[in-house]
Image (cartoon, rainbow, N blue to C red; front, side, top):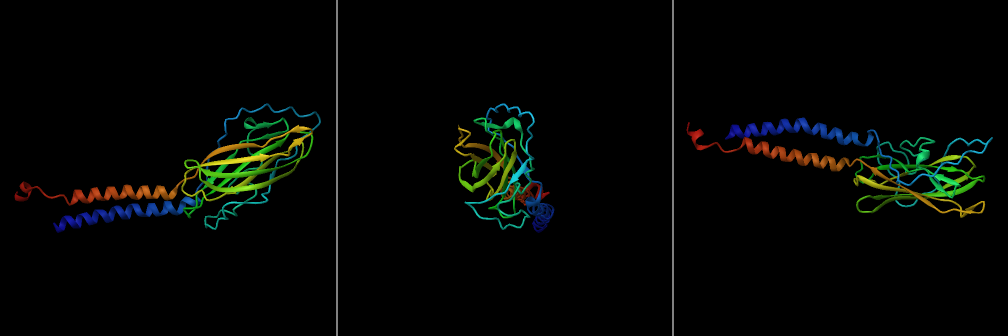
Length: 257
């Protein structure tokens, strides 16, 4: 019996020595890995892009700096992610990103692209940064001042996770396209996140009434803590089965022989 107990303990030690270093390395590397990016549009039927006026040229695409923030708090995690609100998306929102094919027409004056997202998990299980950005294009003949609001909910329970309000889109010139972007936090271990962005234009431009438009996206944030717990549970089941097989009683006939 002592030999079988010693053999069981030896098998357990070998399995733990093999698997636990890999689990520890995976948990430490998760926050600094390649961000997961999911680009989802809301399925709105795009409107045709108006032809440019002869002799006119669009201004270079610019990035809107974020002016204010409400809801949530800046992240203090040590994964290398910058301030809670960044310029240009923080986790990699390229200037001029977005496609004209998913634009929504606002009375023929503004064209709002779909929401793009980049998610980065962090060591703090309650954190997790999601960068959101969209492109807005001025198709009118007047400069336009607008504002944008971004927010993020848990896709399953609808719980609010973070909000950024009153992002200025000031002085958008005729023909100009501009990327509006922010960083949202507290993605935690919710995995599926519902992200939203609303552009609020002026009440009217050139006598044409304008209304706010909202774009939506589904974002996937890797739940590293939940994945680690699942791996540990599987490991525990395997170890229990190995120990039981090693310590199984010897049949009486075999012992007599």
